Image (cartoon, rainbow, N blue to C red; front, side, top):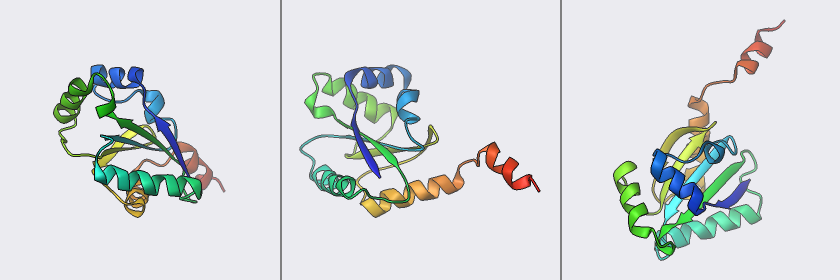
Length: 141
């Protein structure tokens, strides 16, 4: 299921001063996506549509994703943020998506379909560390 959330100025200012999003955002769910875009972008309009349809239909069923969004052309610090994004994340395209699994940066992309986003999270999860508690349970006889 997708949980849509907006990033606020405090979150963005923290990101610009620390180089990454706050821990509370990156760790708000096992799977976190952060979309940085501009409201006029046709690819964002398309993505926004499928995100909302998926959210309304409680999709995907097998994973929960906190999806944070920031349309930075709507803020007075637009130029400052865009320069930060392009310099720090080395990506000038929009929409720009950052993926986090278990609070750790797992990858990035630009415009994606629902299936592509879900597949990325599933693949990233397969590469992430298995919690120690899982090993302990499987080792017991």
